[in-house]
Image (cartoon, rainbow, N blue to C red; front, side, top):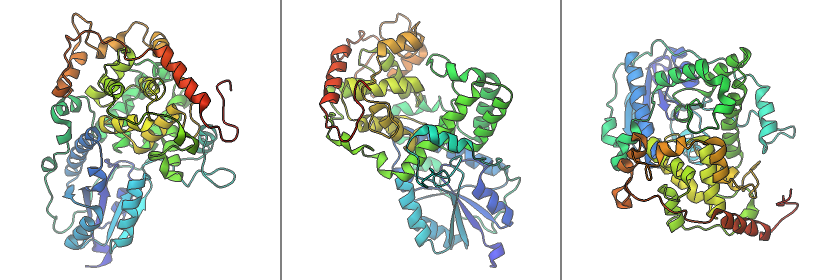
Length: 480
């Protein structure tokens, strides 16, 4: 078989789309047969329960999209390198192409594949607006502060989104594929799986519809509305971006067009897309940020490490007695996502009032969020905790009561998700008890829980620990 006729394996990962897919577009342009592949590999096996289930929904939609083009998605389970080597030998493929990822696990896996594949391996951009190395400081290094990063990113043209192929040349013979259902990617969700799945919006077509609706109806008021958890003010595209069912570049162009039309909220939307790039930029340049304090002086801070303490259990189960936080934690357990402002408040309560290590919260979110992203999860937790680059200072402690008064003044969000104390709770609040493990022993008829801590006392204790911490160099002080 000549090189011009050897198939190209397109290894899909977090790029479950046909539009604006550089690797797929380049393979199509060669005229060679294209064999789309998805692996249940070490990266998938490492996912938490909710993101693994959500990825499976996206894979199913990608398979349907490929079938509509007269193609197929070949599914194989196993470690990436030996599985791809075997599939290349089986099909006579001369190349394996994929979209580059930047988290530590993906980089280790992809380096091993590139070195040991035995045929051409090629990694393409496409997961971000710009590759992490493309945006540099004046000194040639990576950025550590978002403001200058955003200005540098804004000055670069990400290019036009690529069209979806109209046809993929098939191989002479299709290899066998495993069945997606046999992988049971939703197994760890237990009885909560169907409840969380019902809230998902998987697939490229739905992602595009969601973007178009947001730009047409809500982007103008996005900068303000996004702060109110009871309002439908955000784009809700995070689940689609993390699975790659829509590209950041497609979203960027839609946002830029809206800004050009005078939609004021579009600027904030572009900043959120840029923050996603910034998170991956930080993770690429400092891979340890995923598991360790970016600022080493925080290693001696007296955060509690016990992930099974009564306080942490109450936080996880939405039983802290602090209604806004409980609503946020239950929203996540039912829908697989949590409103952005609610995330900050819930994270602040854990890391500051409860003085618990941010990694305890990071692991819980990693298991519960269907829009989980390895960079955003780590960077955002360290931003709230105060241990990361360009972070919110530790002494800025969110007051849940003040936040509730400002952003949920009528208690709509709390009533939406917390059933206790309501004579006729809505279905959203009741569904939490269907999703929660029976071992938690919770019922909507339970009394309203008393607060698990006194917020004022807990705040002062956190500030006292902050004042007493070791201070290398010219660390910020409480009065800064």
